[in-house]
Length: 386
Image 1 (cartoon, rainbow, N blue to C red):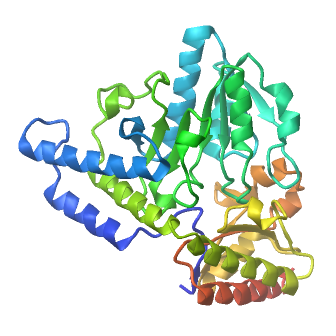
Image 2: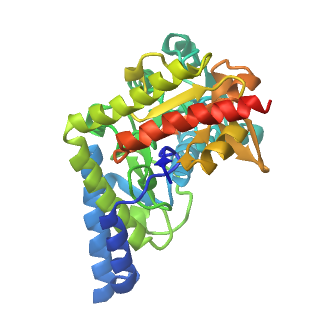
Image 3: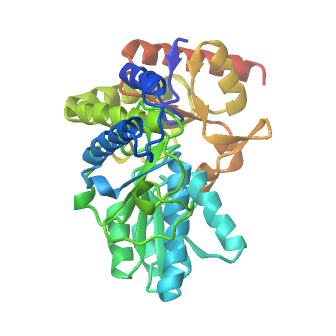
């Protein structure tokens, strides 16, 4: 592999994460709900990890609920808050946007279709950010839940979550923020933000897949979705001890890396190098997303490559040892135009010819320069056969 640049899909786990999880599988396999010593040793490992995760986002330890990943975390937050609101005050309105991750966007559609929620869709500007001013009229005292992402998984666009949350809070709604692409990559302090819940997932910041968390502000009520007494009565099911140990160590590593802002500046510079080089060398290419790089995550760019089908580009680049993804989701073996890019106003042909490129904190300049050359070469190969 010459360059792995698909880090918004998943990141390579830290060596210490892998080592600790293997050790845990060998030596700490007891059920953490058991009262015997092995069980309590497993419980201690969970609580140690919970402290590390809480520290990463400035939360209280008992505000962290471990889940199977970002998707379940979003489900627990949105379904749980909607059911609680309907019970408490009869509200059923869910406000979200068309550029959300499918974990939220498809859930919202499903809830609307089965009559469990009335969904209002926030307007999207051409750069992929929610239009705050046009959103004001949609957030009133009928809203039960506002659910928006902090940063987009395809374009990296940073959303006006604080402003939207303040508006929703003033209307009496519960606020859920999907921070799956944010947490572990950007400074996060929930004590300073008007949120009620925050979703995140370990494998986006060099932890394992299959483990995530939901931060629930103290005092916020949710209807339980998985019955059971585990996770402070919020989420039933025997805890995934190795996974929880993994997210704890990944959170610790992320906090240490974020402590030096030069780290992000360095990777943002590599992202800018890749972006500007491709735009200069492929005529007609352009950025899908905010033009100002500071309005996107430091690791993400989404590029339209003219005259090239993204699926063919992906396969060609894979043969060259470069791993990226498309601004679209794989469905039944074929790539469909990305709903996110289409919601931004791109036509289907343009959306189907776009690549998502996402770096990690371990990406090197050699990888980026190799990817630049490969993208240009792949474009030449693909367009020559059209």
